[in-house]
Length: 123
Image (cartoon, rainbow, N blue to C red; front, side, top):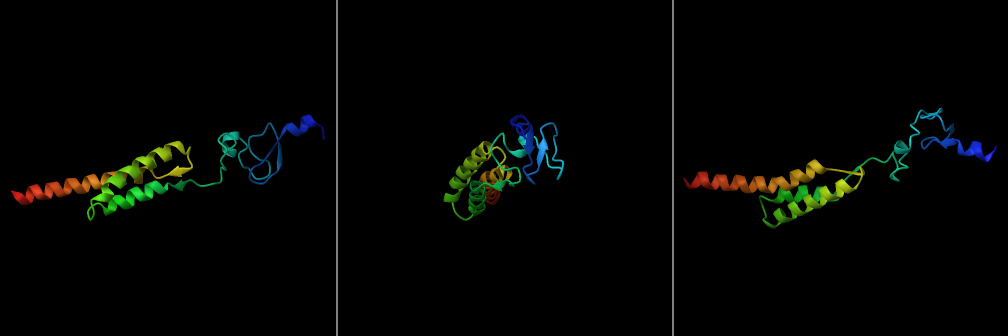
């Protein structure tokens, strides 16, 4: 096999079959051979599922603890901001932005509900 024909073949990331450079899908298993589908552009494995950001979990936990303790309010907002920044920079490897926002909003909702309840109760 000549060197030119070897560079004209693309290896399938799923099954390892050598395919002609001109095809976009593996001739054996049908997997996509495009660079973005293979993860070659950003260096990640396309078969790897995105995982939940740990900061998101901590933001949500602290947000749920807000009615019982005052200190977790600060941590819920801080972890939520860190989670959103981490998710934005992860290029699709992390998820949980909605949960992070929920973790940040829960303490605000609890504080607002408490203030409204106190206003209604004092009148």
